[in-house]
Image (cartoon, rainbow, N blue to C red; front, side, top):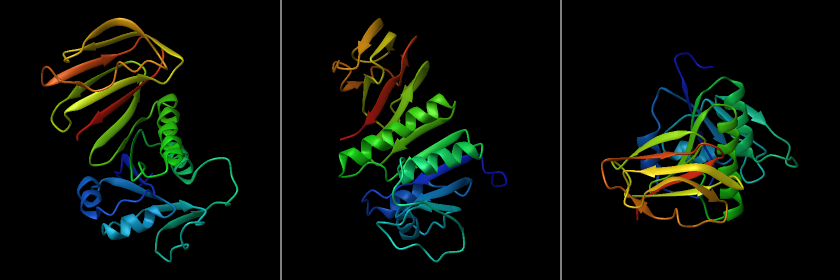
Length: 210
């Protein structure tokens, strides 16, 4: 693990031309991993990654003075998932993933699955862009309205039991939320903070602005 760097940031390769946003959210205290063409997003934002991982099927292998792990083109895991696994392997307990929400829904969904892997390995992780922040929960979390107006809660498990949502416009107490239930969509804050908790199962929480 890099000296004094306790947080890992992964920059994936989804189309996103807002380099100002990346330069704003990525700080020097982070260990930065670029997933394949994600290194181009880093360079555009004037960020030099500490590590680049990819098969470079969608980009040219970079000539840059940092660690590079070259992957085979034919493999079971995506480049971003390899980055997540490498971050967990190196001991990082906080992972932020950017440029992971794009035009390809299958790529975006695969990136969401990385969050479940992090949760199962006791790593705090989220995927974020300018309009959304997504993470998984299997216990309790406090949300605040400082950056987002809306939040939605869905069950990633077949069913999530003992779900409670407090201090929000729509509240529930100790209910079972099934994977096909949609009534957790588009809630909003009644106070500055809201509490989401689950006793058994895994929830997807999405904070959004529009």
